[in-house]
Image 1 (cartoon, rainbow, N blue to C red):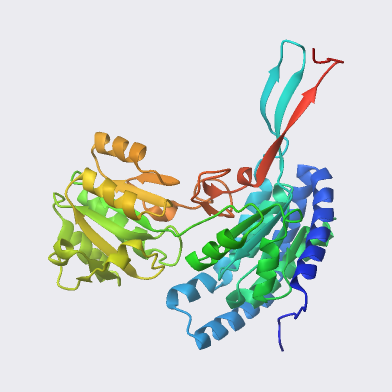
Image 2: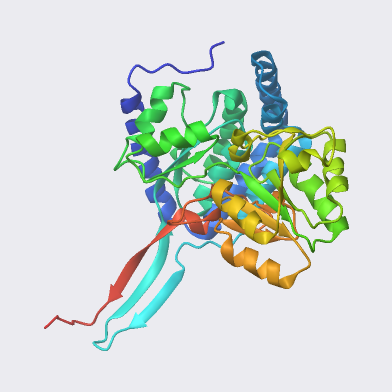
Length: 423
């Protein structure tokens, strides 16, 4: 059966969906936080109840992905099992129980003329989310949007279309049982790429677009959008092993940062090793022995005969696979220069026991997330205590780093007077 719904007019389709979403968002904005939380708990329960249906749909997506030649890393991002689906439902419950930012008074000032001026957090409105491969985004994005009082229009990748539809159906059933309008969370009923273009041009109907995917998707969204974009660029994440790094820590962190899950945006893609670090060869050998292909500069290649030559392109590549670039650097100045030239601004790490080097790295690396002595795989909203995340923003405006509930709000000014007129 053809699971795509054909439409001859994507602009009309998106406009109709957006209008329904905006009506639903008006209802959401009037609901109490307790009611929205209750609806999310119902959605999480529905995900658990529909476990067999969702996993069967995912198995079909996996089979189609294998037949079409998806990489192992892409299949890992796509794959669901009992534990991963349980974690998705648990994440929805976790979001439901988080304190809401909506209604928070950011600032309050009483002017000399008696005016009381407050800045208060409110939902953004209708958020369009365009994503690839990972079906957990369907539930994560829906939960975060609803908890923060926003409606969502979701457009997932074709690789996960069956999984996304099964997850969305269960989620919607749970919400409706709790009195939330079905249109609060809508999944685009077509995989027609023209529908993405229509979303990007729906200014005045969609309030913000969040792209989650590879460089090609994000570049297209940024180039074509007439709607504000909250962008997540490549995760070209670096780990710099400083001369004063603890060798035991460094070796464990390098393997974990690269190999725990190679297909996530927080995976280390470039390892920088100080030439004065005493166990450089052992460090690289650990990563290779864990099943990783290593590509290195001339000095790195001397550490292990299994290291392949790196090209200029390697330093700017997000592999999302068991491949790692390794460069040797003469001190922190050279490490900082390399990161400045090649980091995507996502997550960069230093491993060191030198407090001065640690402080300098934290101050001078201009990335959304900067870590010391920890695996870059902690670059995740859940690990930061934010519940699920809608993405990791690498830009400078509105939100940066893991974007969760607060990042899905804006604010308005409330001014209370007692009859003041301006002279």
